[in-house]
Length: 285
Image (tube, rainbow, N blue to C red; front, side, top):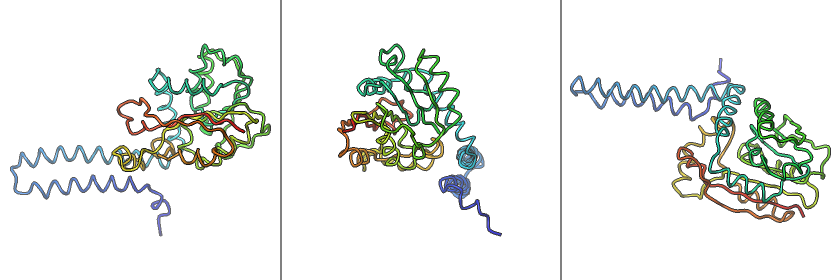
């Protein structure tokens, strides 16, 4: 009988397991005839490396097949990242200020409320009439509410537990701004999310965005992104390296006044591959 789930195992995990076994086999072949202590030392080192690779592979398989565990893991990572100020906050808060987050707001993928830090002690926060947070990962809900309270924000908050592609906004055409920060990389269709954002906005409404993007093709960062992409997608709960520049230009260019900037984000050294970013504001005509 054929195993129906075997073919669903991510290719990257099979490659990692194959690499682990190949290291052990290759070590035995290469050290034949060597001194016994040399064989023992090389075997110990190779075994540790193979064990680490196998552990990573098994962890990725668990994340891949256990949706709830993967979502909780991603939530914990995002909450930990948001616990302290970062150099990226300057870019985040400046683009939100430029976009004038006032009136009726809808944010796609707010996570644990990372953007709320930009509204703390801000005069614009008192001008937010209603804030709708579209977040499909229910494990973010408690952190999002707590972050709002911790920042002293008093505007009404409504949580919608749907994907950005699936939302049906009853009061379309009445929102003043749509916020998109580090979300379009993980959606199934950026175009549909942008379409829903456009429907939600009144004329003169703004789409405010800040996203990490695919590096310029042929650069060493681009090659590194290609190498880790299969693992990154699993660990980051579906996030991918996408060239969002043409997506924003093609979809928003005709119906919006688009201002977009490429920049190298001040990410931690361990996340150098996520430094290529875009940010901007698009105003609905």
